[in-house]
Image (cartoon, rainbow over all chains, first blue to last red; front, side):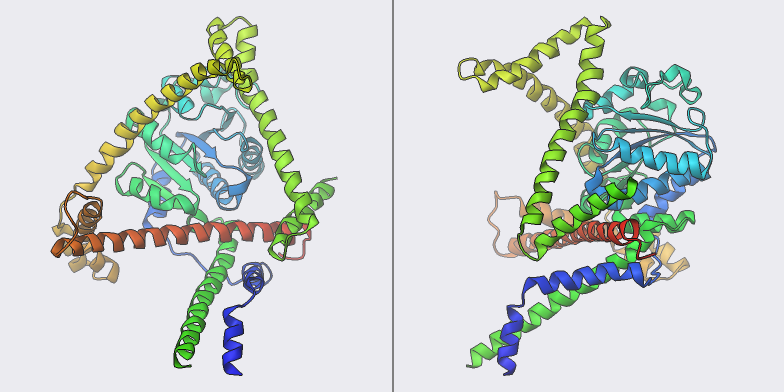
Length: 279
Length: 218
């Protein structure tokens, strides 16, 4: 009888695993666990770098992601904008992903305009999308004005006070890239940071972390936010808890389910193998 | 009206997730919606964000006549659909491949390879880590003492694993095996991060369904 149950468990319908995972990940939306993330050195370095910039510094932000990576990177994008606004810096925002402009515009309006009441063109500028990937990155090193003759809304850059005197990367104190892949952090590191000597911070989806950690260790990146965990740590650091901190509860529960099923599956497998051996 | 569109998105999400139970017509409908809309969106986005501002407008306004060259090369790409004229498409392809190869080589060599090699050449032992541990004893500071030796050891072992001019046997086998083990740990960590990303995506969908659409969770 016991053996039959164990053999059935070994062939457990995978849909039960899906169900368990769904319940575990969704449950924190109804019952908050409130797990506080601990700050890791790459996130602290990211936070500290923005903190130490003189107020009013011009910061170039390249937000390169799409709806598929919105879950991890949108909270990051919102938090970065909030931190920049809190410190009184002035972001010039662009994207190299054709599916990003609407997502980013919504974040800019929510944070810069509605939450902080900043004035467009004076306190922040949205350049919008430019296709061309690495070619655009390199072209901005020569002239941002010829790469982006107008902003996202078609206004010539000369009519935007914040863009007065902006020529290339040397006009910015910092480059921040929130990236879901190509083109993104790797390309900015390869084509921009070493060539144009601009310090860079990066936020990326967790899947890219093993690759980008090497850039942080080598000093090519001054700070690194890693996936939803990094976003949650960053939200806690700037004192503005948001979606990432809530998502951490679901993330933790999901990890528990995965660990449980790995252990459970192996246990059942070895028990069955042992009983088969005896038989 | 906004609720209507959010409901459409919510129903599409449920239809896609229904595949986890089994393949079904609802999933197929949502899948075809997605493929069609995504393809249409990309074509429109590229047309309005690339073709018009980068090529057509500067060309027709007379501000940059040199753009006639990329226009001809772009049109030449479409000759691939012809059996007789297909060879012409190799010209623009060669320009694309040549340009991107040049960019990639410069970017990788100057921005990646040299700086990564430079960053790997660190002192095997850093005396400052001991003084840090003495002044602030903690587990983390204790582990910091082994950071550089472990890094150097790992680097040598992994590089040796890819060194095939010497047969990996005897004592050398252990170095290669250590390299393989470290690689496996690296791949495991990479896979763990991938799982994290997927769970974050799932949470985002549930957040959309239960908070933004149905409003039954806080």
